Image 1 (cartoon, helix red, strand yellow):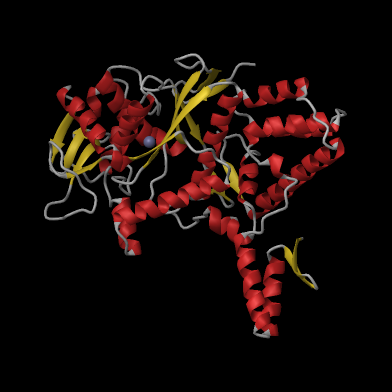
Image 2 (cartoon, rainbow, N blue to C red; image 1 turned 60 degrees about the horizontal axis):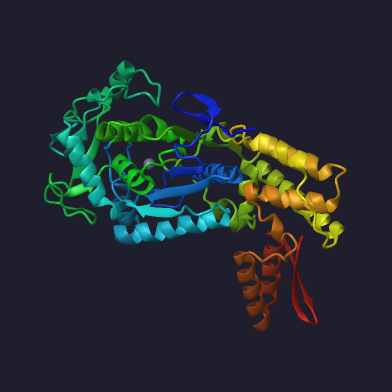
Length: 464
Ligand SMILES: [Zn+2]
């Protein structure tokens, strides 16, 4: 079965055909690096990673670009509010540049722990200011922009079919947005291409431009970068569903206005993560779960989260609860045991990928990345009457898409960092003959799922 993908532009599934046979350009909107990513954001990056792996599994050569928004993203999507970077700097008593660097590294560490493949090209917004200015100049020459007291804006009324992606009713959109506090805009949906630094204020991140000192709007960076690095390969552009109404809609408007050509053929969006109780997870709300506080700190492997996301189709909201994560933890452990068993039973014998199950797996993933169905195929295959060596070869082949490091299940487990620290602290307590502290630490380690035994050869740590 050929790969079918759901395109948000026409709201239906259709066969995917890249512009250039065999090659796919993929652009995924990256993080705004003023804080940690929350696990709702990370769900979108896992979905995009599955997409990229499925494209590769279908023998496409993928060129993947991801941006890092390190400037110009205001707290409100519609160009009002404070600058997130400068606000983060204030909060933490560091410079905006330090904040950006710190959270970029934190993001890269998160995705590495989730086995998300890195893009071929990372681009920082602050490294493409010239390209963004050049694009704004074109829009100005073509008459799509105008100047207000606080910046250069894109006139959305001049762009035909502005709501093509969002499918919103433009009349009610303008009506609803009238509450906004920027009377200088011609239309409520107009958005900033360039914002001026406020009078008398020296921002940490600002640049000269033909219009005055300031910084680019958020949307323009993705247009400038995708065109710069993907050139003609404008195949698939992804993000979270919250990008549809404003960010991606504005990217399309300004890019197509500038070039007069279609900007990306296929738009794909990952749905939200809902925290038990029904609230969408967002940085602006209090239910802020990071990979660290929801998983690592509790001694749960980040790959459990990757596995958990496979239980829900990427276009459906996913429920997060401690129980569902516990179930996924058991599920992943069970799968690892099955793979270990198949490897042991085949005793070094090389198997071959089972045709029938390869086809069925491909049918599931090629049906708009249907991972719940793919996981059902995984279980049917492992429980089938096929030989263990062939089963093992097949699951390792599937793992090119699953990304669960199933070829590593035979290797001994690395202890989580937190456990290593507690063990070292317990050793220090024992050296100081502080037995009460030593016992307390042993109990803490026990609560995190590990048992410490003192043997004549030293300490032994066993996973419960
Ligand atoms: Zn973007």
